[in-house]
Image (cartoon, rainbow, N blue to C red; front, side):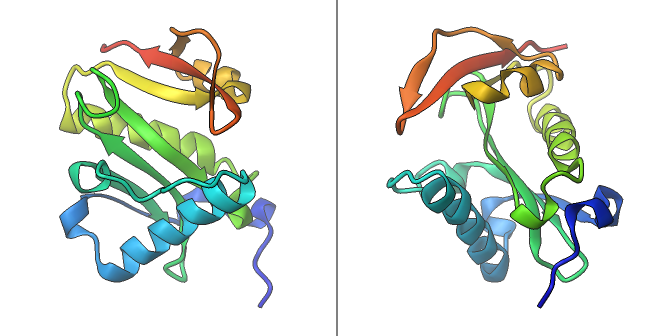
Length: 162
C-alpha cells in the first residue's frame, strides 16, 4: 500500500488526543509502543528497554491520521520523575509524516497540554543535540553540558514557566 508523501499530508487532517495512560486503548498503546520502538530502538540503533515506569505516570499526546495510524507522539512526564520540572519526552513523528510540519505542531500542542495539566510549570527536556535550534525556536535554552545517552549527543534544555 502506498502512503501519501509528507508534502501531500497536512497536520490539520489529524485527530489529536492527550490522555493519561489508563485511558489509552490497547490498540492505541500497541501503536505507541511500536512507533517508539521503530524510531528509538531500530532507527537510532539503540538497544534499551523503551517501556518504562514513566508511562503509567504520564499523559500521552498522539496525532492519529485518517486511517487511525499514529502520525506523531510525545509523552508528558510529571515533575519529579525525569527531572525536578515537568518534561516532554519520546518525541517522534512517523516516517510518512516527516517534512509536513507535524513536529512543530506536536511540540506546540505538547507545551500547551503540559501547561494545562501543570499550570506555570517550567519544562525540561533531554534533547538530542542536533535539535537545539528546533527546540530553541520554542524558547528552550540549553542548561547542561553535552552528554552521551545511548551514544547519542544530548543536552538538557529548559523552558521557563510563563
